[in-house]
Amino acid sequence: MELVAFVGSDKENWGQVSALVKRMECERIVIVKNKEAGDFPVTEKCEIVIINSSKPLVELKKEMMDKLKEKVSGDFEVALSIASGNGKEHMALISALLSIPVGIKLVIYTKEGIEYIN
Image (cartoon, rainbow, N blue to C red; front, top):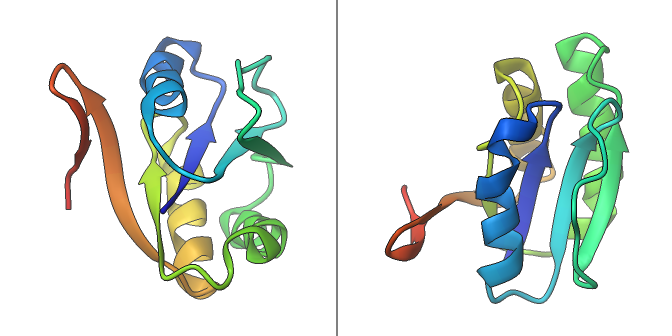
């Protein structure tokens, strides 16, 4: 399973995503990043997709879908982290992934390790 994670401007939440990037065993990690977000630490497995969060929701969803389609199409489902970002960005990302179509399993990092919460 591949990891898709959103990274917004809220640096205080980056630790959650960073822990997943460092510890999750997967072939590829796609970081969807708000263009206003700073330098998020990545690994060699990471592919960065930069989006413009200032767009209206429907346009943002289309931008994400267009950029993610080649990266995740063909996958049955992906692990998804939305620990960073805001509601509009999360709605656009979830809608884009479901429209590709690809299933999603929400993932978090806890004291016990990686957990799927759905």
